[in-house]
Image (cartoon, rainbow, N blue to C red; front, side, top):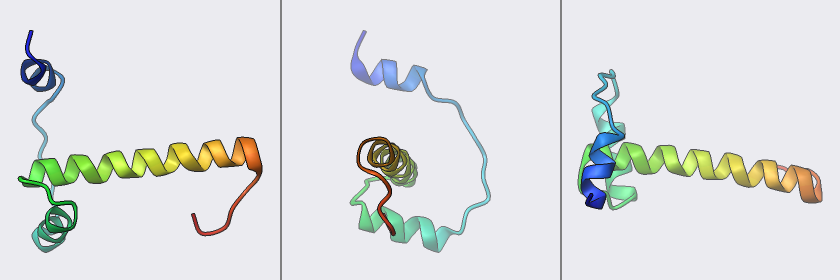
Length: 66
């Protein structure tokens, strides 16, 4: 099975009402080729930031404005 097939299998079609200017801005900031890619990258960054914050809280205490 190719990677692209696996990625497509794990996706579902969703409908959201999103500000198109915001999506366009995020797409440019993240250098994404498509709006979908931009949204996925933004969500991944939120998840990563949350994981880092949890790790910092567990290992070194709390840091403000992370």
